[in-house]
Image (tube, rainbow, N blue to C red; front, side, top):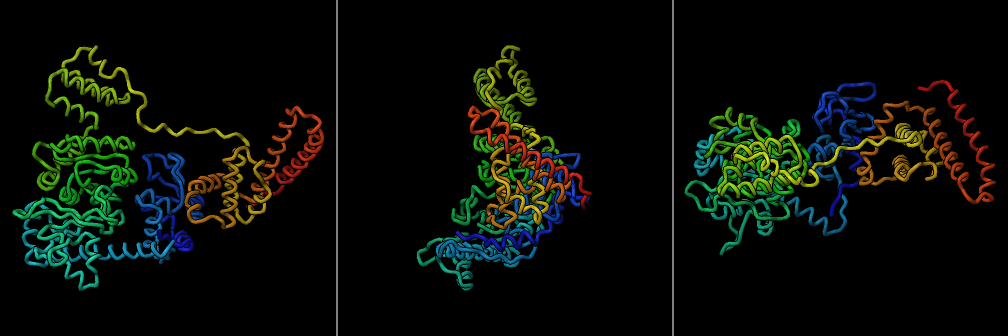
Length: 577
């Protein structure tokens, strides 16, 4: 598998303007040597988020988010490590070089590059054909009838596939693409006389990955055209339907800023909502959200508002996808649309009413309860189904409201209403709040020492080399000291540096709050030596083998006095800048 060369990663890190990067997500203001603002990762009124522009780390003391530029892009853009480095390289003008693990890996990378070029070429061809060819008129009429204007259609790069059997195949071949590449890209299928176009006479919707690169197509049947209604690209190394969230490449920034996404069912729903100014809309490629789609959305927001057709929202598949989102700690709301209306129609004909429905979206539990109350069956059957749902819910205000809703709908006695949630299920499925761990004075000294080491590398290397595991109270801090020492020596690999970005961000933020001077560093170094001597004295005094410990007990007090003299001398020095 190919990977970005470590020197390229370092070039990207050096090129990044951290304040510029983060300012795209939250407004920053200078506060001393740092920049502060409201955290882009959680809702807060008092700023607890800071950026170190020199060491290029960010840290939030409210939600504990922290890291470097690459981690910031991973969290805000929903990309993996490689994608984040490539995203930053494109933004800051760095040309990347890659290392190939094997000739086979290099070949696979070249093949994917060729597939990407072919899919992009096809998307541009379909787009031109829609707007310039006479044959595309029927698709233009259809879009007009759906209320989708040309600007919105162009924004989403809609196209039209000619009806001819091999028009795309011939055009691709003229550009040097082979029959095998066309097949693997999902653009052709096998005909009796050779390859034929997979998509013919259809309205084309390019499907993109998180970075906006075309990975496949969704193709809609024209009125009176050949079924099926929708024909997607086949599954391939480039395209997986379950992993694509339609429109996410265009909605990403709006979703991150709003903290929520509107999830609709189809391509035209997304385009119509964006056209109406609802730019957080994306589509699930079907009624059921998949785990991969939920994971992708969870990186950007904490709330999903589902706006499916009235019938589709109540389907078992849709409910399963919603429960999957809740299991990933997302808040799921359901906007109930009028019977027979879909989001696209409402966005075009009555956008104000659609916005009201979205604003009035109810929790998933409330939606399910209403759905089950309206379902068929006897009173006892509905009671049992509702009880099963409510007993699986953790205590909450919404559950209490749901019990009252059921009690009123089924005209229950107080005893029967109370039995709806008894016995309660164990656990609530929500992540526990992060516990604040109180550090001992020794641990605080260790942590601050490492923080100032990171801030003053020119003075820290020699001091760190004189310490070993006995100078630290636990293995966690010793391991952190080892990481900092290797970082200052330039010994960490690219992946190791990325994995430790959160630690470095914590230490950089701590150093910014404290006195990061050479004198403070030396004082903390000798305090760590003092803590070690005190710990060894305590252990020896508690030892049963007095003969073995007697000689050490004679040496350690003298060592302790020497360290105290050092500390007194350091504290008596004049303040340093």
